[in-house]
Image (tube, rainbow over all chains, first blue to last red; front, side):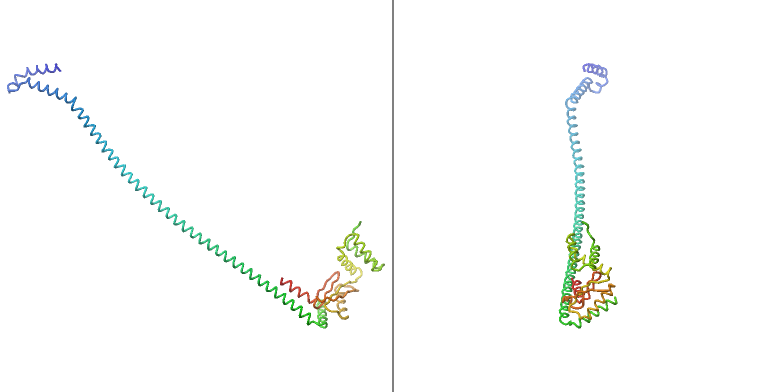
Length: 181
Length: 130
């Protein structure tokens, strides 16, 4: 630094003759320049750099904040999209489940109706069969009773009405029929 | 002890009847049946005797049932009928009255049975109704 000042004094001494002609003290000017430079260096080292660092840090912070805000916005949008998609999917699934449930309910109703119809038919057929069976039994019973009655009546009438002569005639007829056979 | 067949017993009985009285033959046959413990077969053996009597001697033994007592003429007609059917030359028939027959007659021989009674169709009718 001292070297620079001496050198500047020398340069100022050499050029004093030119500048002093217009009323400017060259030495004083150089010293002021040197002072200014020193001030500039001091400011640069102790004031400007920290201020710039603070500003940079602040700018970085703001940029980071903005970036975060932007990312948050994007995340929000994405989340909204995802939410919409989930809701849409849930709606779709719910709709599918409702459709399936309706179809199942319809199937159950149809199956129940078919089963009910089949059971009714079976009951009807069973009842018909039973009625037919009972009718047949009653018919047989009636026929049996009627036949027994007829046979008993015929036996009684024959016992009462058939005399010896008629019986002999029957026997003779039987003999002739047997001979023919 | 040797066990005789029904046919052998029947033929032996017929053979014995030629030389001995009926009472003696019946006694011997009864003893044989008792000894062989064949009392359950008496009816079948009797039938076999009747059958062999018809085969070997052309004699028919018959039971005739009627609802009323038969006239001699009708008896003869029935006997002739049975002889014709079985080709027997002689016949000894037993006639019994059974009012359950209602009318007609029923004849039983060792080889054939004729049911021409009025009870038969009535029984058939009843059986069909069951």
